[in-house]
Image (cartoon, rainbow, N blue to C red; front, side, top):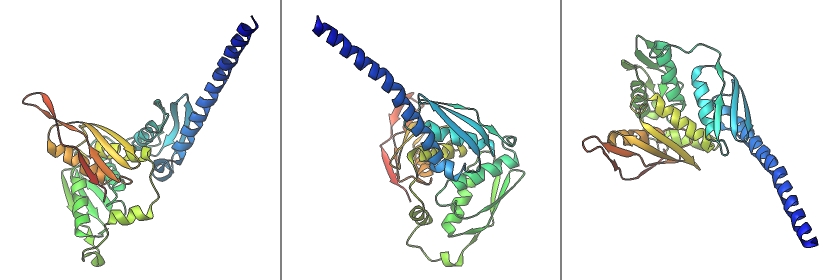
Length: 279
């Protein structure tokens, strides 16, 4: 009888410890989520001027506060959604200014600037962007002719851009071939970027480009290595997604597991896995 009582007492004790520790464990995880969000590269770099509060309960994160514009709302949500332990995100952020109409000149200017900002080879150029009647004019100084051409290519790929006039000048010192690329120099100077921020930046960049915005692409990052999944119409779309992702800040390499859907047979065909090292 005493043995039975002892066993029952032990069971009750263990159960009570489990019930007590579960909220403590959840609380510790929630604290880590809230801290990780505020200390993420995206929050400290691109959202540092915004008033964003992150509250997590059992992994369900809630974002409240205000941001400069509508694009920051999406960027904040994507970053928090990819933090370890987050199961859902309730985004209650509001923009301080009204979002410009889609494909308007103001909208196009914001999109072009955003795609330059997240690109490891363009964000350091300080490029001036002007848009009038859908025509984008770029001014400033590029470090090389290749960088100037890349700026044109990225601006042209924004949905709604009719034409790009690139009036950027190439720095005299950059006319000779450089042994180190702009991206490599920036990565050397910059601190390591957390995986949640890398994922958010890649997703946002893919959505910005008209060539990849409609792709059903999944993005996962581990130690700076980005893995893309989903479907594309052809191999060219897969290659483009890889290129765009590779150019994003913090990306060390890209593994593309996207599949090409054969519209003639309606059977998906898998493209050979591609891994491309970052610049």
